[in-house]
Amino acid sequence: ANDAEYLANEIAMYGGYPKQNIKVLTNVTSEQLRNELNAFAATVPAKSIVLVYFSGVGTNVNDRDYLAGIDATSLIDTARMVPKSDVY
Image (cartoon, rainbow, N blue to C red; front, top):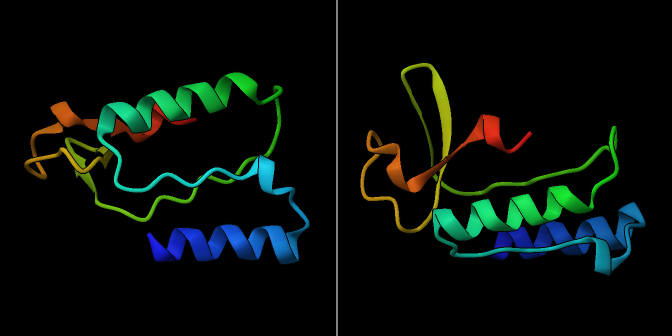
């Protein structure tokens, strides 16, 4: 969580991004991650450039990348993971 907070502060301070445009999520379940990403995507105009920094566990299963929430129980069971392709 410290790295995410640090990056958020650096982006605000040196990147010039308003704090209200930066959201930090820590220790979220896969469902929470998916919901937050979907809510975020709904607010972003088409062809915008965004940064999603994920500092957590990810895996590749059958040539597909996944982001794991804190509720993931295995690196091969993707039921509690977010497919990276769903993020963008």
